[in-house]
Length: 266
Image (tube, rainbow, N blue to C red):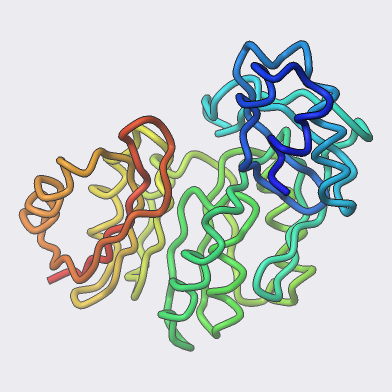
């Protein structure tokens, strides 16, 4: 049964049809986005989410988009416990985080698994904008030596905890600070860079490319419309990279999607 159908008996008919059927689940926390018209019914909708998935202990409503230097969104608990700290499991790895203080996108699970499968033992891997570690931990588990950079102190604290929990602390070096500044001081030549770029920070690629050895790989994530992907590929070629792959990784706004470009430095 869809969420809109489950809510149908609790809401006026003209409101039930507005209930989104899709929501994110991070550990035992559900995150829903509701239009303004449904705000008076948010507690009812939250209860329906919890009834649909009995593992859910908190239901949050997104109140503001991801923004700021900490890359966090605004959330309000609309049902269940007030705490939004949780443990999320993904492809055999465990990540502790607080949904309100650290960014995490469960919809990128397959993409993170795909990239981890590309990593080879012994590689030196750079991960700026590392968050709580969902790209870091799998790469280290593959046998890579990973340098992770994250400026949100809450996310960085969870990152340190997560590399320990998953047993890869000896393979990961963590720097807390602004990636755009810290990349300027990096001197190591990396075999691979995984760059989950925040919205509006495409200039990070300019700093990353010189840090990757010739023949090395860059997985670069950015936000754009489909009509601009050809222009971006041409730009990346002009920056000294071969585009070996490109794929859409989900929509973030009407017409705008997150894309990953797999690049090889010439």
